[in-house]
Image 1 (tube, rainbow, N blue to C red):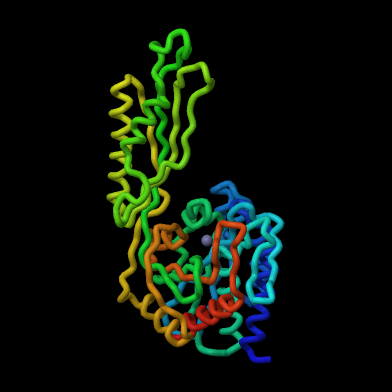
Image 2: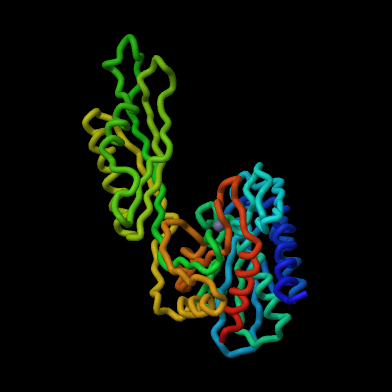
Length: 374
Ligand SMILES: [Zn+2]
């Protein structure tokens, strides 16, 4: 058996094993333990931090250090251990077409177990090859799917690497994101006044009516070429015969331009404020910046190293941008330049999620190249 066939079978097996473990966000305990066992087998030193107790989960981020035998700078490799819902009792099915799918009742969990198994298999390959390699720091995080909460509480003073590759992107292995946006979520509550809808409607201040008038004035969807705005939920009123006292809307704003996202929130708030003012209503408004926009220059070493590795492995090496979030936001915010790399997952966050097994091997070979191409 050629070493690639052997390696492919091994990573597939590992992938199927890990997908069978329940690991929805904040419940990554069993996954963390299984991964620790694998690191132990690989002879790599690891530790788990206290992220779980900080964010209300049952496991922490796992940090591991794969000691190199060259003087070259270390790099950080990362992926997340949690999956979205429905992610319990997952049953991965390997088709004759070489594609692994879920059984249709849950997500598959290739987001992000593809990333995790590719990193682990990449290191196994390096070890077996006996090649010289740089040091690699490994960070497997919790609660990435909850606005990167696990990565947000990691202590980055522990990280020696100045460059990171975050394996957490859809599409065939060989693509990378060097530019990603800010994500703000917001909540606005319009507070009017209740009254009997039939007897004395004049006494009431209709919060739903005010919210609707404000919403009608707000441009939603793609606001411009770098910004989106969404009103995602609306709730209000208490009964058919009561003028509604409250109406609450929740939504998000994304933009490649951080300042623009913030000012768009202010504009949105002003529209609600002005409309409420007209009717003697009040508003309560607040927002949270979950992730902050970043861009890594295409001339940076980590981009060049990635593109070179892709060329040698016959992968596209395509560099692009996204308004999606990833742990890489936290790395960049903490002074570590990072790219998000595709690891073969498709249709993520749906029950139709799948991955081609060829991508698992390609991802492992890419990890191997990034560590050994010194
Ligand atoms: Zn992910």
